[in-house]
Image 1 (tube, rainbow, N blue to C red):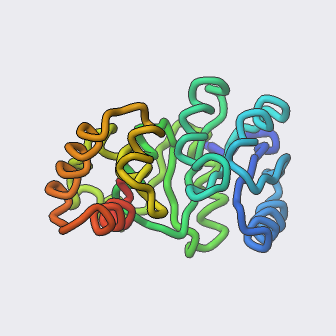
Image 2 (image 1 turned 180 degrees about the horizontal axis):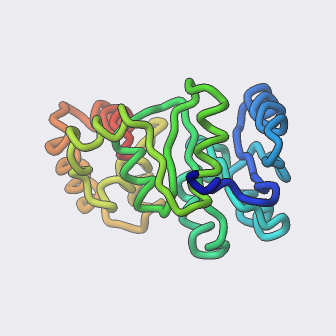
Length: 210
């Protein structure tokens, strides 16, 4: 008979999701699993590390778009500061660029929210055995989409140019010259095949590059 690979003790889960109703529902459903215990629920990304250091979860289940800090940035912090905690990214946005960034940040899995809770519970158990769990359709899309063509600095400049920020604003924020900012924006526009920085920003976000 195959050996049961489920953990012998309860799996301690940290859950970070900014939508209160979704967070509560996930915590309730996961709590009904006989071997899973939700030890912390968070609505912000910038509280994830401190909470993980306090509660020492086995698995951190993180949304991507969180106030204060993205789930992807929090995943990288957890990898450095709480290496025994496995990270599962759970998101509404099944974007190939997000998957690549999640893997680079050290995530052990990436799932979209429209799946059944049984699959999520199974994924939590599987990552504890050392597996990497990725939504199959998203994995195929990521392979066909190719890597992010933007450099980290081009991403920084595009991101900083949101919400109507001027070139001067971006230059001050990133401590660059205005001519350097213009060069980065021009390069990003060219790589995204768009006509201006607003379209470039939208395209980069749609593809999950930012």
